Image (cartoon, one colour):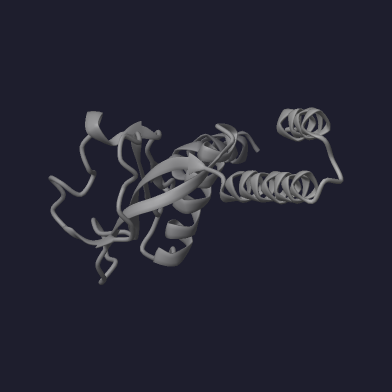
Length: 171
């Protein structure tokens, strides 16, 4: 009975070790200009794809992830990296713009598990820019209509100026 308890105790103590051995590797999100690619000194090099040009003056970030085994799909590793990058930018109130992606090249064997590295930037959300453009268009249309009313004599210059101030004061 005591031997079974010892075997059980040893088994339970090995579980955390086995779990840690099976874990993949994920890096913190780092500024690209202050970090080095995980593929730079790797035995198994990756394949880099340029996805977009960087916005002038934007801060660029790097994020790396490696699967725990060769049985993890490269696509799932890529999806996880993209999700983390999107969440990072979302916390900043911005959208993620992927710039470059480096991925491992099969065969995914010991020492070359599926890996993905994403370089990205956070940019203003496109919807905010579109909403701003729509607001500007609406203001332009109102001002154009007011000008027509002024030109055809429906409004006096004072009334036009008063209405123009109201339109321009709107957010």
